[in-house]
Length: 562
Image 1 (cartoon, rainbow, N blue to C red):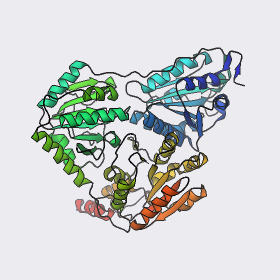
Image 2 (cartoon, helix red, strand yellow; image 1 turned 30 degrees about the vertical axis):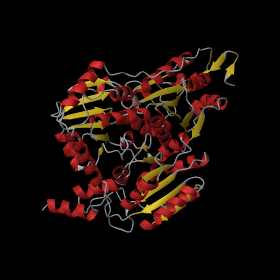
Image 3 (cartoon, rainbow, N blue to C red; image 1 turned 180 degrees about the vertical axis):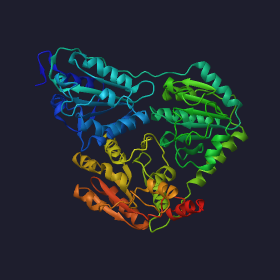
């Protein structure tokens, strides 16, 4: 029983708050520390509770849900080991600025500070990887805490909130009153800031725009595209934010992230005005803080960000605009230039576009599988709204460099570089958009970190196509190892299962591709099949990146040492 007259258990009050704040899905792994919440969810079928197989995967699903919807992703885990496993997803949400709320069952209040079974002080544990961490000790205050959690997760620079729930508090009966549904607050740009931006754009000879951050939606993407067209702006995306601007658009010039096009890096350095919309300007977007001088860039910089604390954090801009991306994009779409882009500006855009198109030309790599050809085939065949997810590793270069994202939201990838993210993110994507094609890319090492979440996909009848790029090693680390310690291989070789057979053991479809020509028919069978499918793509270990081989890296490193 979760209610008695006008009295409700803490667990029921919490679930009622989730419902009134608009939650329709929660991800988690059950635990005895929050049984009262699970009991309350039994009576609220409007909230789908996705049972996961590991807390890290559940938290990553919640992060992906937040990216896709703009609403806080909800995750429930138990104390101790459950919370520590979930921390990987919380770290992703923090670095990616994703709205998310993690609920952790906690020991009873009478056991606090005794190092009881699985007890942890979560305020200390999550203090540096969440926007707010708290423990609800009084059931009467659950509505207050949850209203604040939703507001905090979505305001300014979004991010994760962690709330600990003592199990005895969740059983308390109380007549606490519900809160009102939360309403996200968004900062708007001042008219004086937009006027100043207009002047800077008109005066610039070599402007460039970088899009990034979070809280975008399809309308904001349309607004920013109109703005780029009107002002003749070469437009780029920060690391793993490529779906904010149609990659086929004439103004799109590539992504500013790991493995940046050298010509684009030079373009950033030589720009006389860089307009940064939403991105934090962290290590990945700035190529290790080398694209801009700190603290004062030589390029005139306009930095737009929803979090005031991010403006001037590393770089002092010419103009700082404290505004949410949706509000800024709407205002920018209405910023009329004094004249249409002149021939010089048109040529600037066209040259940047040509450099991008040359950069994504299909390369040839060692072995019988040509990943460039596979990516070109997918680029032509996948629907415009197909959602692509991935984790981390050298294999992701094929996705980020050679696939073209055409609409929002279609990219799920952790800017924190966390391995294992691809499959949990794909589960969340298929849960939110069951009608859309969802493709997960994973390396062999990456996939094994959360491959068990295929069971979650099968349990809920989700359709995901998983591409496992298998080269028998932790490829990124091996690449660095050969550069720094050539021919001293240690800790990077992998002995893998038969991934196709592994998938079939879950009830999914499984195939192996060992030659390029096998891929297209295998993928078409996966598209036509019911349920999820996994295609293992076995590539030559020498093909460590699109532009170089392991042997070439080793030879260059040895040459540098002589």
